[in-house]
Image (cartoon, rainbow, N blue to C red; front, side, top):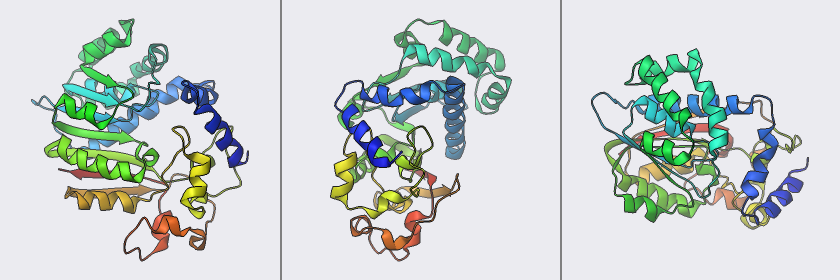
Length: 313
């Protein structure tokens, strides 16, 4: 499907209070959807936690998740690892008890439990008891209370400031690419404030044109970096809504934000997880180039499809 058709559909859906959920319906009916959600969220959560090298032994640590999305598997996983308090925030409210219960059932897998055991402060019996208890609850409120999770939908930065917590760990999963550059600048300055000294921050970011993502509406005719050839105004005319927006930024922008805010031990782990279509750097629009200072090699803007940014306060 041509990406512009999908963009029009998403723009129409963005005017509805349930537009995000409707946009997500196509993937829900895929075979083993809930199992795949659990595995993706679980393993990504564990991977980022291991990159942080946080020691949970004899420590009561706080975590902040930026971008809850459609699942609370990640904050639940952090609870099972041994975090004392987890705050998770999002710009909308897209979670449901029914979906979560279908997801967490797959956490009983011996494979997942063994992964947890290697990192968690709890024994296997303790973990199974905790999962049993979580599944027994009949409301998200009960789950959040038991796991000491605070969920803030429709949040703004003041909501996090008001809580007054200093966080040992701040993380996100494919969220930053949906945040406008000016807000990212503010967010990174806030993370500097929210993180404790020596606190760890780990963020996985997707850099490709989301209209090229696999699925029913995928445009197979475009490159993963198709969106870099358009002006800001043209791109906004198609995607300036909560469902479709992506900022078109490369890893260089985020690394620069870390440097500007004087974070320590900055590490970016780039990856290319799919076969890409050729894209000439000659097509990159000046509006994209102007977002970077002293850019010497245009190839850097299309070097990675995804990556994980790790830094310390």
